[in-house]
Amino acid sequence: MITTHVLDIARGTPAVGLSVILELRHASEWSPVSRGTTDAKGRVASLTEGHTLTPGTYRLTFDTGTYHRDQGISHPFFPEAKITFQVLEPKEHYHVPLLLSPFGYSTYRGT
Image 1 (cartoon, rainbow, N blue to C red):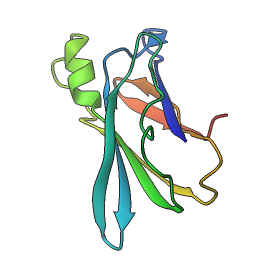
Image 2 (image 1 turned 90 degrees about the horizontal axis):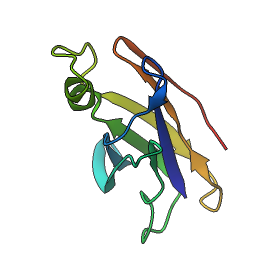
Image 3 (image 1 turned 135 degrees about the vertical axis):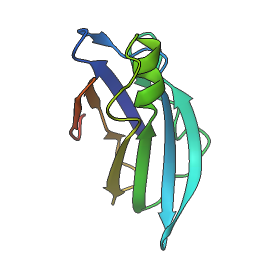
């Protein structure tokens, strides 16, 4: 399972309504697996529902530009955040949080 959680650390709240795309790399090409939108707690737990997780290189793309514009920031510095990571054991839970502000972001492997 692959999940994510986005916190807006500039506002001190979950980032609600932020679009996320999950992709899988095949050689040098990326193919979409699924899409989701963060809920009231800033979480997306359904990215791999109905999909068989396989070992490989995955990427989460967060539409941070639209999110920040919706928050009143007319010219966000980062239009998107892309996080690329490896899935080695498909039966494990891969939680990839994003800590977000208008001028920076950070991530880590969560639990």
